[in-house]
Each structure stands twice: as C-alpha cells, then as structure tokens.
Length: 139
Image (cartoon, rainbow, N blue to C red; front, side, top):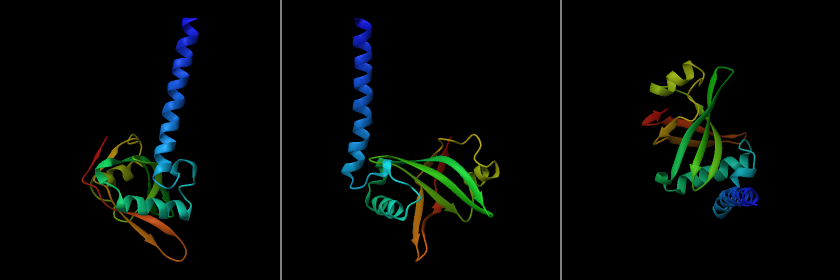
C-alpha cells in the first residue's frame, strides 16, 4: 500500500511540474514548447519576447553546433519565464565561442552564455538570429 502511495505521489508531482511549464509559456502569449523553432512565426514571436523581457530572468545555453556551407550556427536553449530554442548565426566567432566552434561544440553542451546579445534580422526571404556578443561562456 505504501508503494502505491509513493508511486501516486511521484506521478502527481511529475504531472504538476510538466503542466506548470506549459501554463507559464502560454501566459506569455505564444506556446514556444509545442511549435517549430525554425518557423518564421516562432522566430518573430521569440524576437519580440526577448526584446521586451527582463534579461535577468532569462538564461541562454549552448545546445549544439552546425556548419552549413562554411557558415557557423549555434543551437541555443532559452530558459526562464519561457522555455524556447533558437538557432543563431555566428558571423565572427571570437573568444570562447571561437574555441567552441573549433571543436564543433564537443563537450560544451549546456554551457551558459552570460549576457548574450543577439540581433534579429528579417528580410523578404527569411529571418534569423545573429550572434553579437557574450560576456562569458560558463561550462
């Protein structure tokens, strides 16, 4: 009987935690968790959110690296008031980010970008996040 109580308690906790994340995200006006980060509407909503959000309430984490036709891209997970993902284009790799790119991101998964600065550029064909700077990358 005690085992069943413990299982029920754990299941209730898991459900409460997972529901809380979704509700928190939906309160922000867009459901980032259930949409495609590569879609234009997702990127536009994320750019608008980041522009108006309290930056102290957001954390940006390294989530992967891609080199496509000589262009560097870094996958970023954003946590805080929202849970979102994006891909940022890196035009000028400098400092620690250059080191991460040299090793193609190996062993840096989960490293935090401190004070990450991004630009959001949109033209008639596409929109993308562009890396500007970061004060530090904490592994």
